[in-house]
Every structure is written in structure tokens, then in C-alpha cells.
Image (spheres, rainbow, N blue to C red):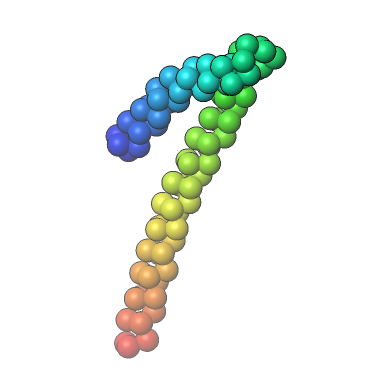
Length: 86
């Protein structure tokens, strides 16, 4: 759990700095035409970043759930084998 929290924290910090870099790249690419307002860009970035984090959490939980389910299935099949031998 600690490694997962560190990964999320590191990605959040990286994304915060990358947001400014990407924004300035867009502004220079537009050659001074500032029709992408910083506020809209900030909201869009927050929204997309939140969706990415939610997807990552869902994938992690699904893997953990699959592992638990697989363990339950395997232990049940072992029990059935033992019962059938008796």
C-alpha cells in the first residue's frame, strides 16, 4: 500500500509540473494567439487526470478481486477433491 501511495503522489507532482510545461508549449505553438484560457486548460487537465487515477484504482481493485476469487475457487476445488476421496 505504501508503494502505491508513493506512486500516486509522485505522479501527481509530476503531472502538476507537466501541466505548466504543456500549457506553455501550446501557447508557443499558437504563436501568441491566446484563445485557450489557462482556467479552461486547468479544468480539462484536472478532469482527465482524475479519470486516469480512477481507472488505475479500478484496475488495481479488479486484479486484487480476481486473485481472491481465484484463491476461493482453488480452495473449494481442493475441498471437493478431498471430500470425494473420503
